[in-house]
Image 1 (spheres, helix red, strand yellow):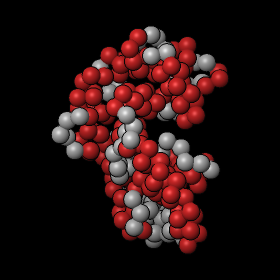
Image 2 (tube, one colour; image 1 turned 180 degrees about the horizontal axis):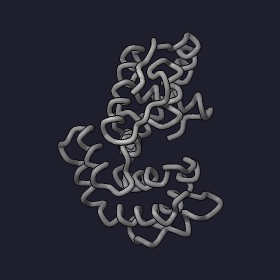
Image 3 (cartoon, helix red, strand yellow; image 1 turned 90 degrees about the vertical axis):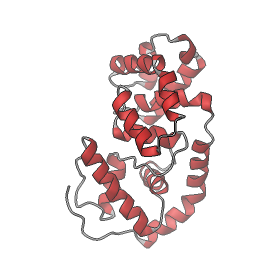
Length: 212
C-alpha cells in the first residue's frame, strides 16, 4: 500500500461537515432503528449494489418487499433486469438473493450472536455468497453497527485527497482491505470524527445527498 504524505482536512471540510452533521447523525440513527424484520431486505440491498446504482438497488428492494420475496421466494431475475432499475449481473445476483433467503435464519442467528462487530463482518464475508468486505461493512452499517470501514472508490478518492493514501490503494482481499480500513481509522482518529460520519460526509460531497 502506498505511503501517505500528510493528513489534510481543510477548514472548508470542517465547515461543510459541521453543516451536514445533523443530517449525518439522523441517518445513522435511522440505521440503528432499522426493524428486525427489515434486516433481510437490507441484505438484499447490499447484494444488489455492487457495480450498480444505489438508487436502482433501492427500487428493486422496494419491489421485492412489496411482493413479499422473503416469504414466497419467487425468482427475482425479471425485476433485477428491468431497465427502469437495472442491476448488473442480474442472473448471478438473483441466485444470490435466493440463496440468502434460503439461509436467512442461519445468517440472522449469527447477527444475534455474541460475536463482536468485526467477527460478524468476517463471518458474512466467508458465508454469504456475494458478500465482499465492503458490502459486509455496508450491510452492518445499514443495520445499526458503527465504525466499520466502508471502502469504495468514492471514499478512497477522498482519502487520497485528504492525504491518507498517496494513491487509491488496492483493497482486493482481506489483508489489503483491513490495512486500508486501518489507515482510514487512523485518519478519523486524527481529525476527531467517527469513520462512519466521515464516510457519509464523503458520500454527500460526492453525490450531493446522504445515501444509504
